[in-house]
Image (cartoon, rainbow, N blue to C red; front, side, top):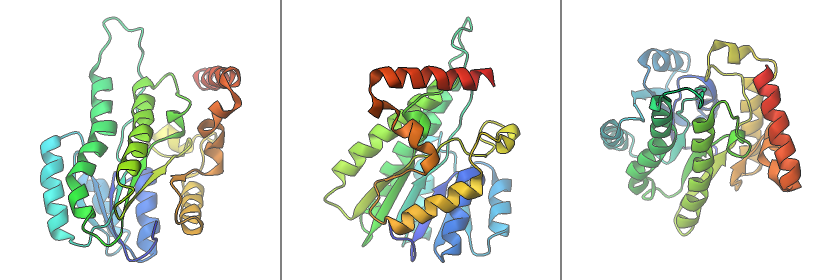
Length: 256
């Protein structure tokens, strides 16, 4: 991925990893546009980063995605990088009777259909650029699911699969496809307590390592910081070791 002279759109750019990436790319001199549902968070981020721009977007709304895509491509003719960061993560108890599907359905709409729809809406414009990048953000939990958040993990596994297919189909174009695979990072994705959890990787440390990888490995297809290796490569030890890892991982997270 080219690190400078880009016009970059980052969904979910008003907080957490999205904001961290937005600020890091902004510091390199790129034009950065952040989007999200919360105008307050967008305004605060832009106020702290002079020159950064924002547009509201609800990635769970297909009509909003299309109108947003029309506007952003009209206002930013040089847009050449899309980072699909926006997402939600909530625990689900599958033993509840009757089971409420609303969280699962909203998670799928936001985490999976949102990036697919926005990518489809922006791809014709991205293909017109001399060089473009689509970065999809999955998770270490795409490879070893956290059982308490089953739909979130399923959507991230689907994003991993979708990204591979997207990369293959675009291999003859000027659009490169990158997958960012975060570990457990200190953000407010599941509440304020997550931002203070000592088990999670500090956000600044994560962003710094991600930017270092992108700068040193410009042709990287997957961006994995070292702390996500145990999850990303858990299956490489064979089925028995994977099952043991899955059991231990979930027992520890459930106990805590």
